[in-house]
Length: 42
Image (cartoon, rainbow, N blue to C red; front, side, top):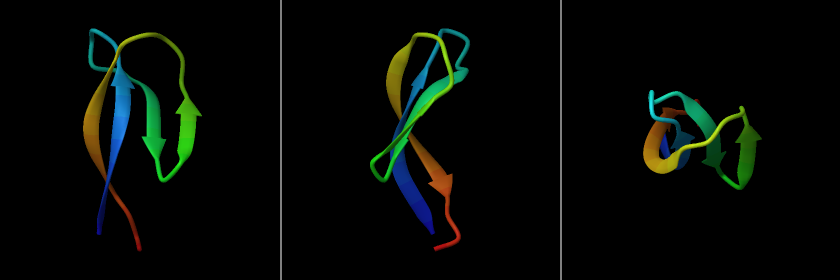
């Protein structure tokens, strides 16, 4: 199924932060939050 979440992206649309199911993943940089969808096995 697809899980909805949000991702922080920079001007070049590189994903910087992602937030899914209460987990924040730091990738580095600055940008703005957008809605994203990721595939999940459950």
